[in-house]
Image 1 (cartoon, one colour):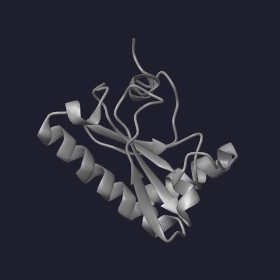
Image 2 (cartoon, rainbow, N blue to C red):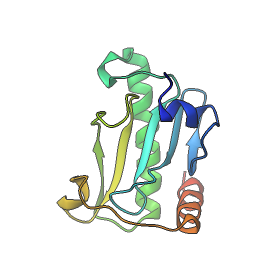
Image 3 (cartoon, rainbow, N blue to C red):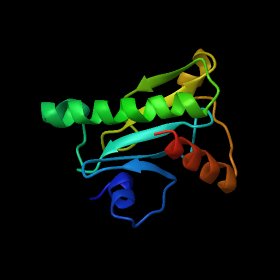
Image 4 (spheres, rainbow, N blue to C red):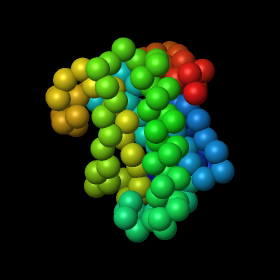
Length: 129
């Protein structure tokens, strides 16, 4: 069965897209830990990050780095944190989270944003790529 991320890749479910290329997609997390919380995924459905072929894994990390640099230019934060958990969706995804303090990485404190805020943030991050 296709994951929710595969459905996003196929355009069956909308997302707040930041960037994409032939192999990877970056979009805002709709249940964010912090404003600007972004997910970077391979378009190919792969359950576990270390099951990826090495060049595909390295490509995802390079893509994620590029997005993180744009996030730092867009969102006022101390740094961008990186997490790969993979328990909630069986599709590899890298969390890029603008950090103000350690609680932003705990996946327990969430922020609420209006659709217009998501759209504006995605647009601004894209401009900074």
